[in-house]
Image (cartoon, rainbow over all chains, first blue to last red; front, side, top):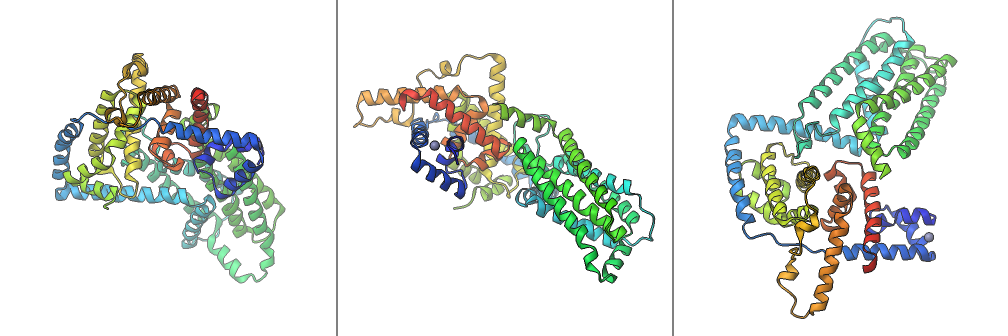
Length: 317
Length: 188
Ligand SMILES: [Zn+2]
């Protein structure tokens, strides 16, 4: 790390918010750079100084006031646990914990893992469908990939993001059952399933599985699989570059889900149909990726203009 | 010790003792957070009361998988922001004027018999300058400094409370500390 980097990270260093590698880098730098060491000691001194503003006491009657104000709500809460309401609350609780679990999964899972899960579910859906072979229109496959990247992914992210409703009420909105978000998520899920059915019909999954299992020349598929893997790497690199440009990681990671779908699932679906390496397939996949990058970003941007403009404002501060 | 989240589950069924326990555990910290933000004792007391009323109003939607402190500070933070915005609209008198010199701390009320008057006067002057420097910060930066320095929250927790990305918290903190260093230069 150079002086500029070290000084940019000094507050995080002093507050022990850096990872081990960066912390060690800074420690090493401080040992050899007097200017940065001085900056560090000043920052530490400042945080120590701030501690001089110690806590104040409230007036004696605040506890009594709060107990009085609380009494009526507590009695209401006590009444609310009648069997019918209890059922209502537990339904909401269950729904909230489901939403929360999905949110946490999204937050904790690396986007790639999350995408794999999505891919696995989609794959299972496809295998479950048995339809006679029909001709494939490549345009529809591109549209399916781009559609996923923009609409479904954007809507899911919006529904699960815990964005506050626009009424701006100052309370714990994040945990409320948000009917709007629920409706959006429900509609998105229904449309996604419908689209998968259409896609599966078009692409004839049974044929694909049969060919894969019969064909012993695995080598035929290697180039296509390599191509998919390479496109993943390209997408991941573009995403990390974009994340540096736009600090709103959540949104862009969401887009990544769509992009991976488009770059991995779509080529595999092509493989299902073609079962051979085709230069046109390569070009088509590249086109899909490019379309999905643009589409995914546009979709997420349109759906989250408020959040993204806030992120930009933060950068300007 | 029973966790805050368990206590809140009991509050959901109207348990007054559990509510009292949460108040005893966190009341003072939340009051001080609000007080440091708004700068007026009476207003801070009113907002603390409102925060705990909202805890009860929103109790049914509290999910025990989330951290209670994150949830309650989110409520308090939103209340502070609303109040700040309203005050801006009203073009209210400056916070420092509101506060005057009555910003007494426990140390002022129960002075240390060993400490001499000059030392105390200096401490008071330092506190006044810190207060002014922090209140001169833009609202979001002030919030981040208060949550980090006085509530001991990590960036991750602050991001959850404020509903913003981690990077935003970092950048707010960086700018806030820079401004504070400039403002408190003579004390360093
Ligand atoms: Zn240096």
